Image (cartoon, rainbow, N blue to C red):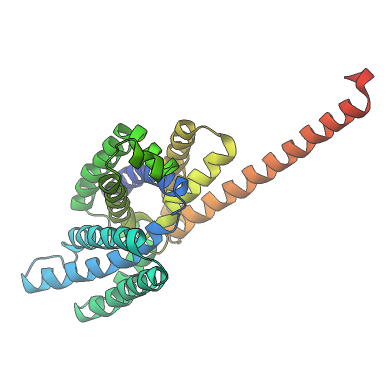
Length: 290
């Protein structure tokens, strides 16, 4: 398996995505914006399609050579629009976001067909495919993952304050608008680097579910981020290894594993909590045995 250049590239991308994505997810969960990545993923599909069209116009081969740059550009524009709507939107904000999300994925589906893409190409972007990870994708992922890690961890203090209480952060002099846009940009870049592994429809899961699992194991913000990074990296690599020998979508496999881990941890934590409460109750009823 490791002798295959295709698998080597896919494993590098999966490891970096699994390590970097939960960093952004921790901030999104803290801010109650867990579905922001899902919305950006929808918009990024239009960027993928525009990349296909641009490659065709300029005669660049293969046709998807500009797919990731197109996705990065569309994700950044979409993330900033989402942040503007979130900041200024009132009653019409939800409608505007819904139109942006649905328009993004509908535009992507139509434009990929116009650019000569097939159903197989479209499925690989919607649900991820290790067969589509090129050497250029590895370099895009390395550069963007390093940026996400450096900014996400380097500015952890300011971004935590923003996520915890935006009004208090503004009163302390933090550049709230700039930090809000920075979080949106980090989310956009995370979506762009993750789409090759998990696909645009499932990309939000790799950011959010590891954080949800980590929150069951820790109440500390820093520990939650670190645990979620470890879970994300291990599960992404495990999902790819499974799909190497089993004909299954890597994105769907990774997400199912994450949700199964969440269910197991939540069940064990619930049983442990019940036993702890039962022991406390017995000690209060029978103080002589305490």
